[in-house]
Length: 281
Image (cartoon, rainbow, N blue to C red):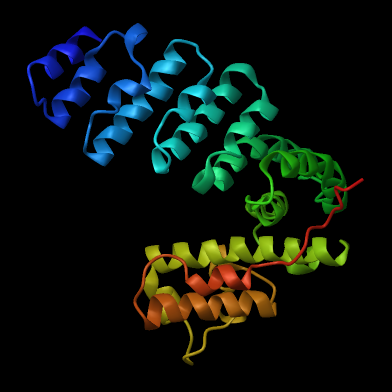
């Protein structure tokens, strides 16, 4: 890189000048190592990500080795994440893309979902009209086992996958009812009920943001109930202890504590032990 070499030769270029020189250089000459003299950590990371992913993608190069050259940490993790998505778009090579996801550390869960949620949606759409959860589970089993192998134990696919599968049946359902999960085996039923509850919690959160008075003042007592909120079109649900617990947590979080977002305790209430399928065979 002649421009960068000139800056160095002139003595003491600033980090912003070094960063700008990499961005301005001809794409064919840019390498991750060109960013190494930038002292500011964030600027160096941005530069390395640009040199590894953006430049590598435009040059049509294999992105994994380029990401390897990025400093360990959030920028390298993001590079693997972006590289996985890029590979999936260009080559539809889900296994290779998944291998990149598995290396994205803090982003492995979101990265993996970006890949496996497409086949899951196809399965949900195929069975949505009949609401046949058992058939959907059977069809999704090989998909899950494939991605569990690719993403490894550090991913949260064991819970996220099933919540996404079963949740797809309830996201557009008018009246939420955990009894729809009853025909499933015990562990699958627990994941299914958690999926129903997650949809309900999201609807509670939307209510607390859009019309907080309806959540905070909708009941005569201090303790809200699933039954009392059923008069609201988007919160029609059959009574269930799990839904009631989530309602009380969202009410406490939003109405009593005045906090925004979802209640931290909600995630714990939605946790399910085990997976509905055995991939060892």
